[in-house]
Image 1 (cartoon, rainbow, N blue to C red):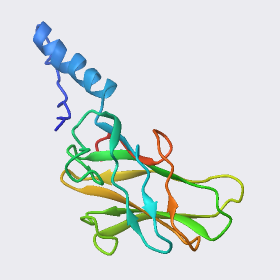
Image 2 (image 1 turned 180 degrees about the horizontal axis):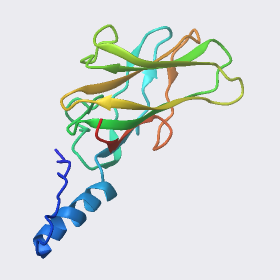
Image 3 (image 1 turned 180 degrees about the vertical axis):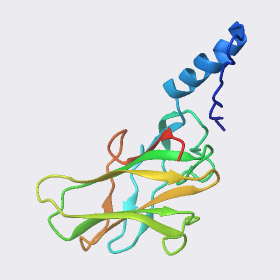
Amino acid sequence: MATVPATQSFLAGEKVTAAKLIAAAKTPIDFLMNPPRVNAFLATGVVLPTATPTLIAFDNEAWDTDSMHSTTTSPSRITINTTGQYLVTFYARFPSNATGYRQLNLRLNSTGNAGLGGTLSTISAAAVSGDSTFVTRTFELTCNAGDHYELFAQQNSGSSLTLQTGQRVTGMEFRWLGIS
């Protein structure tokens, strides 16, 4: 868990020491230069049956500076360790198919169940014929330590589709912006 550095102040006439200067400037700057952030993505395709919300288990990471994701234990979850305001992005690329819609649903504390927890954001797009359908959303969100976030994908093409894989193709990102 990252600790947001406390602010330091100097008293009038106080001698500036290296330790106090590091605490006042270097430590907060170091934190801001590498804040809590995670990028978890899909490296192995997930099959989505038609008209069924499917939990996405992210099996790879580009970065994780605050132990927010595990590729082995509950890989569908991004768990917040440092309370604050976060920039949240989630996205998925569905293969070409002209029928129906493609949908992503970000849920809070759902423990892997599309009917539990709370919906934070749902976005849908019409299927694209002759090209993949990319669905994405970015927004700011106040997150509390201990909360976890999961992504569910759904489509209604009439047959199963396999999500496309890779960094920036199907995944989730959280980046700490500041104190809420």
